[in-house]
Amino acid sequence: MAEEAAGIIEPQVNTVIFDGKLTGPFGDIEAALSSNQLLGVSSSEDKLIAFEIETRDMQKRPLLFFIITFRKDSVELEYSVPKDTSEKLRKLSVLRNLMGVLSLAARSYSVDAKSMFEYINAAIDDVIVSMSQGYSTLFNSYDSLLAEHRELRRLNLELTSSNKALTADATRLSRENEELAAKIKTLENYSDESLMVMVQEWIESHGDTIDIPEFAKAYKITQPRVEQILNRMVAAGFIELKG
Picture (cartoon, rainbow, N blue to C red):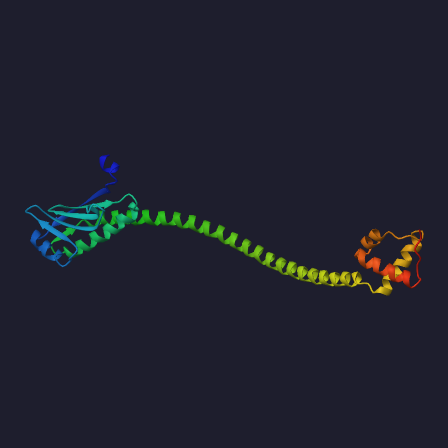
């Protein structure tokens, strides 16, 4: 608990033992294993230990490691499984290392093949089952994402088509607006003759009177322009001032 509080998490250590038989001196095994420079080896009268420290933690303590102990009638494998590591894959990895070490020591040591093969077969089955379940989950997720991707692609095509149509409509409406604005501007710029006719018609339809602000507002003309036209019409004798 104190180590966990300090941020130090001990790896899990698993052990498996197989029946074996020493067929030569431990010294021969030690000499055979010396070709593997990654292995550390130590021996005594009744056993030989081969080990490898694969990685260390921040405190330089062994994190990933395995230890193989040869005895006269058995071989023991100890290996670490860090908390964030797949125990099933880790087991296969160290079993591969064990097979490599046993192949080097084969001249002086034999292992019960039946029990070892059964153990390796079970370890492989565990990984295959786990991978099958993981693949099924992954495939279902992929299938769902693929369907979403296709739907989003369809919507994107529709939106792209709709956007093109809206752009065309906006261009058309902008052009029509410009044309209408030009027409309005043309209408606002009445010629004097046209404006005189409009004034004359207004006066005739309003009891021989004209309200200059009302007339200017109705035809979107400035009041000074209306007054200018009225003065011209009076001077030309087209209308008369009363009162």
